Amino acid sequence: MTAAVARFTLYSRGYCHLCDAMLAALNALQTEAQRFTVDVIDVDADPALVARFDELVPVLYGDLAAPELCHYFLDAGAVRAYLASDHHRSSPLSRG
Image 1 (cartoon, rainbow, N blue to C red):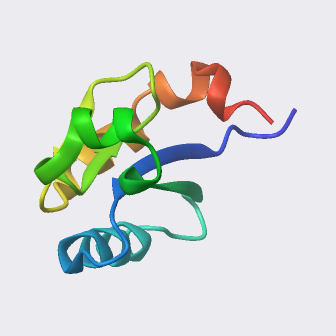
Image 2: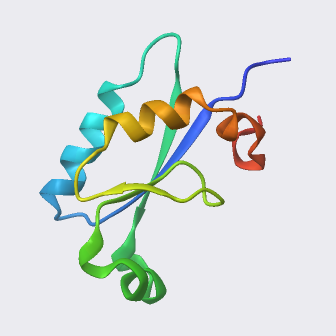
Image 3: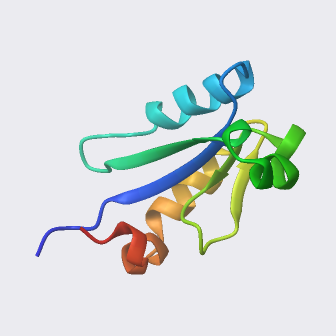
């Protein structure tokens, strides 16, 4: 059995410097021992996402069933706590 790989969803915009900074900071937390994937969703591609997030971006979720981890700036403590938890291991989104 292979270990579950954590998965994050980042809601962002193409022209958003905060979004770029959050993605870079999140990727910097990745190590050989703790790998994860990041799905980047452009909110401007879907009017429903614009209505939901609009000026809140960037917004980071561990998985879509989990609460928001952070917005505007990366909360490294929240990300590390999520990675250390069993939550991402039991999520159907993180099963491979």
